Image (tube, rainbow, N blue to C red):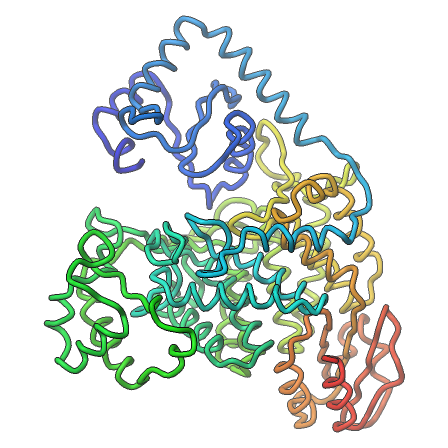
Length: 621
């Protein structure tokens, strides 16, 4: 629509003559996007982007829509024709449009404030699984037909559900999806990383835009699947995604950019696709034969006469048996040649929420893969965020670009950054990370909580006043701020034994109970939080010196086991007294102590390394 209308002189003249046009970056101003997306869904029954809103000068909307072609096409109203109609209505029926805008705003506000509260029923966990199961594609994985989105939080929910219920079908659904996505063109087999979504059901033809948030969350899913299955294909894919982010989306300061455009030179996918003759000219005959066979390239191509490299035709067990040396030789040659092309535009905004996702995912991958480099990169990225996107009043900001930090942080910025700090603490044992998580959590509650009706607003009490305040709960492209903070509350409660935070999480479930109960599959991350709340949980507190071999051995073994409902806290003797939170664990002289805790009660410590390891291994049974 940008190319067809917003950059078109005919459309521009019409807009400038009759309207005041404001183009909003929804990543910088998700508060505006959230409100008017509610309007669009209320008026049309659906939402999406690009989002077009027509409103009065006091920001009250009277018409909304998503994509409009420049001129009418079949059932699609054309943007030009729409502009003429709206302008005519404004001149001839202005009072009706003004009244309509008032009524629309009133109804949307009322719907947002409908707040039936009750305890969630555990049967929702099964209901969510059954809904996902019914829409699951058993041949190509994923859910629905087309377009297909990775939606990593759906997969994370299914993993947890499968383990808790001992339901292999749920785990198989995740495995099938992860493998098929990797085999398709949605994964860039030359430069790595996943595109935003696939326009077909096979994951073959992507919308070529690559988002930081998709790739960050997919790293976690692939890493956890490796932890559960020990199949090295998942570790390999996760490391490839990380390689892409570090090569293509990382600033010189160690923070992460937002996205890479789908098109270059005005053509979507031009950077990523190949004619068969191009590949022949780059590779030797032997390499070309391998490429022809492995990547299924043809003269006709599979995308506008060119080829999107993919391995969809290969059986799953063939993927791990390819000639790695030959494949890497070909990949590097094609990568180097591709780098000579005009690159798609990189959106070099540094968003706090997206960076926090990447920090969390790197930390989780580093912990599971025993890769200290990933953890160090995550720590450096957090240092950048704290230095540049937290102001002198300890207020988180949302966006950094070209030396400028801007916009008071939204709920997502706080929720995701606290999540990142939890992962950093659990992985490194450095107490300042949990201290900062607690500080930000207190500030988040003060700024965003609706203390009367429950839930958390998307904008803080110090933010710009818009026509209404929303409480995002829908787990759409990414988990909502309310879903993430609910999981944070439960995990911090588990780490620190603060039962009050667990109670606040329970209130979250009540606050959004009506919406969750109506469509549980739309709130999978919130249901992951609810699952964590309901199931029997354990906490293992390991206390030792920072350089203890016993501590390293125990953690290395623990990190190879998938225990999504167990929290492993590392505490170091030399700084355990720096925080009052963990004082109770300091009273012993042995090299290492392990406290096994359930329901906020801990057993007597275990001091023997082998006994500790044996106890941890038994937890999988």
